[in-house]
Picture 1 (tube, rainbow, N blue to C red):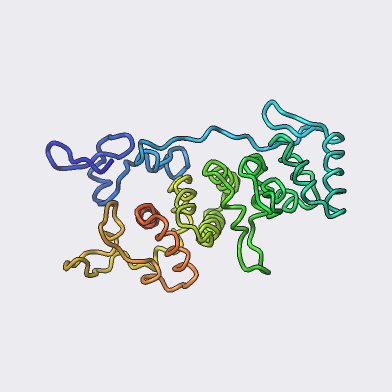
Picture 2: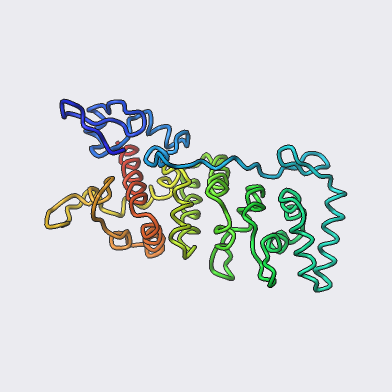
Length: 311
């Protein structure tokens, strides 16, 4: 839904609640799309802004991650004891040590998804065990999307984390995440952090990980699963370098640069052309290629939030 002019033509309505945005807010932030109340809810993760722009969006069913409860591993109504699981894990390890990876694959993949997730959590080498859950008949390793969805956040972040040796994140694991799993992992990672500076750094690491996927469609899918307010946090420290109040030429006219990042802007600049840090510019360019409209919204939102903070 685009901003809707009032009958008198003197104002606009919030794209979420459709309440009239106050003149004071419009003077402070002329191109805002949200009223103060909804903006606050978006920033705190209470509202998914993208879902209001895409009325056909279908929510995934909630998938619960595995939990440890006393001597059992539990996922919803499913559970298993440590002793039973240890026996199954030992069987798989024995097959792997004997070089019988096909037999190990067959054994693991005949188990329920919950049992496979439990095996991964219990194993001393969880990434190796996880690679069996999606292994094909030719022995090529892979991650089962259903199993990944049941893994706890701490394990997922540990397996995804930047590896200096391979100079990248575990992109294969990120590709195996559903939008719901990715959103849950990002939100759980940021929720306990009180420091705005730390939240911004961690949020940017998630964006950096997505930029390395090499798959624009998957990148866009995962980007759109996260509340734009959380994405904006990652960019607030960098928008000051984007010179948003600078007058630039566009389509034969002179406009303020921030207008190129307004909702529905027909043209725009690649972030790398207006930001000095090559790492940040490269990350934002990759995300821009995945979903230019969303990234314009996020960059503009980060700029507005920084502007609000400084007033």
